[in-house]
Length: 473
Image 1 (spheres, one colour):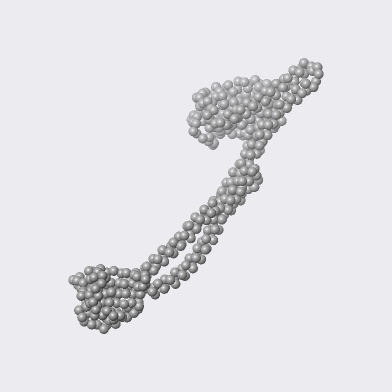
Image 2 (cartoon, rainbow, N blue to C red):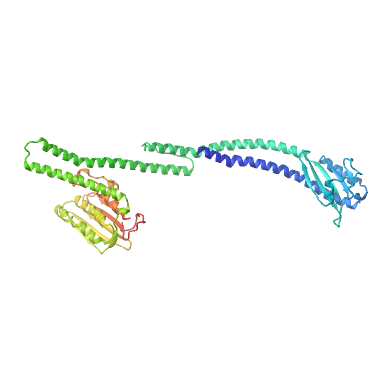
């Protein structure tokens, strides 16, 4: 990138300067030569009137005209010839052709009305032809000027040499600036590449502090934000793998301990044997629940293709959720109430929504107090239906509320294991609701209770993205 940017900068700065200098030099010398030839032509136009009025071409002489011509051509180290219509040279500032006939291709063309300007680079001399016409546009002769351009060439050469030196210095400065700019532009990206390599090696601790242009600083800030997200993701992944390993290993360890206890004892009483086998069965059930929950999460991670959407009555689904949970609530002395405000029809996967709401209600019962209450409510508007699960339980400390939907995360690990939880219930609930393009929020105060608010669209649209917000949730 550095090389390409450097070449690009040089191409955009140095090359245009060189090309401009070459073309400008060519234009400059050509322009000043043309100006001299135009000056000669203008003088010839003025002289023609004197030649016609004095009958100079017909044989009259004029010392004034001769002297003026010599002075004019002397200024430019040149020569002038006045030739009449008979090709007779009436005057030659050199005196060599005066009184002689000059029939050449140039003189014939001049007598045909052709006026040509010509520059000869070999002699560094310009020739200008001025055709003399009377008032009737009849050609009476012509004036042929030869003027030297060596003074112009010398001046141009001196100016060009000075310009080349200036251009060389300017090109050198532009080249150095191009190197500096290329380094300024590419160095932050080199640093960014080095940081990416370090991150790919697992180093998430070092921040990138790129300075310079606003865009570079924006990239630096965005990269650090992304790095923070990757670091959190990596920590979450490692914690998840650790939790999965621990959760799967714990029931197996318990079963191994129980089985070893039986194997190492002789004449185990039947009651003890049954108790141990019941404990082993409980651990098997616990292992099975963990595996099933993990499989559920894996399937839901595959996306909306796993949903079996149908237009159903939400009220009936929630009644089905509460039916197996009522005996559990009764045993714990928890009042379980369903506020059924209206009949709500919506598009959803009945099995998955049942699992999601069951997790919320079951947790509300498990983490409640004796004599407490759990309220499940359903409402809807023209776009969404709303499910709220509130309880009078132990609540969730504010510092933990942002993490309760993480897989295997528990606020109180000891109590969670006592209640038989796997740490995956709320993660599954959140996945299910987001698969339906809905969202879930929690509000809780420690020792006062918890409320989960769920919002799901009444009409399921596969292409719709999950949205948050709204006054009702």
